[in-house]
Length: 369
Image (cartoon, rainbow, N blue to C red):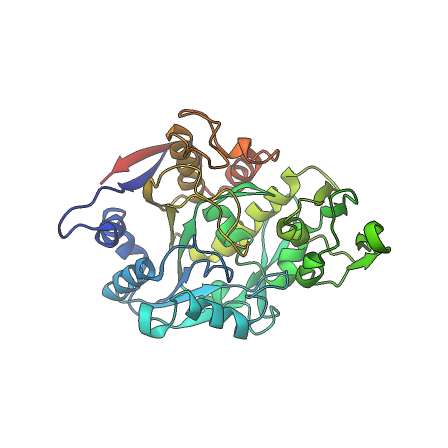
């Protein structure tokens, strides 16, 4: 059974949420995982341009200061996206990060895009997985001496929910790695709902989508011989006209994400820890270019050295919470698991497979600080 440390949203004089985040770091003994001179990757999501629910930069600065106190050399990092958005290459990614408040001046640490300029900088790491024997891990993450993962809990169209597992598994896979993880997905267009707005064309990295037909019969069309199965068109279609057709069971993608997380953590030797932010818990991934209303009130911050336990605790705390009226979870109740009501995709396989891989376990002790 693993320890998961929890700071709720109650604050007082000299004990605001940034201070409580620092207390979580200390309570979990994370200074012990950092040696003097260690290069410490702080993996976060800088937010897609237009979104607003990502973890704010002042929290990252708090962790930067704690890492420096322990003698480490921190840098903030993420890898490029597979889809064509504001983070598809390092130049756009760093500009987007700066627009959202992440730069050397604000966080006192450099911003390094982990897989290089266009997603080609990676290290092949050998693992003993069910789907992969080697995974392509973004080089800056692979070469870092220690890792802190700072994750914003959200719902997710593919994995049911997204937190620490998805943040490092999908998030620190190279562009080619992301394609491997998505390879069991194929989107399809519902002609009756498509209005030929062409939004999906702009987000397709493979240029597999075109607009066909005339007049009222115009709609998007996907060339399956070109499609790489990234699934981003499904997320970016505001009409809900593009859905996922699975080449296998949805759990396969989740298992692949867990195997990539295993690759990220393989050489860290226990020098990794995880922070999950249960604030503005939006119903869909931060890769969208907007953030929908949160499904429950803000809950707090979790910290653990066990990636499986912290994600399970996050789901459990959201289940206990009462939903926010008029949100996508508004018809649910306190005590009801929320994420399974947002998407038909079950989220359990990512945690079950991570347990099988030896990354942690779902049994935990919640320790409130």
